[in-house]
Image (cartoon, rainbow, N blue to C red; front, side):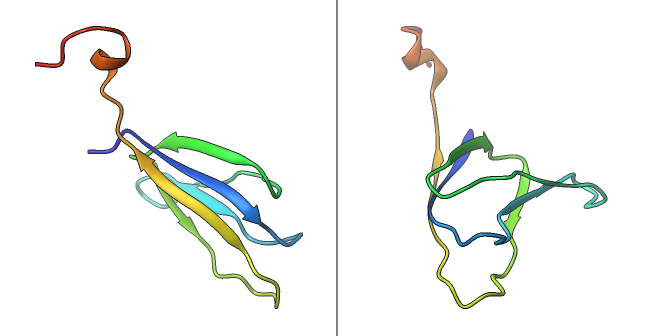
Length: 79
């Protein structure tokens, strides 16, 4: 599986909904305030979503998942 997810905000109109994170019961919602050019990384296990855009301007993001094998990063064995 993936360890981390990430989002780079390339175009983000002001007052636009960004990525939201919720707990597993969807009872608590956390909004991260970001601006154009910001890059965030978070655990892939965190439930997240992007709300629909409601303005006439374009929102452009680059998102991807990262799968790190810590043993390789620190010179250890992974088997």
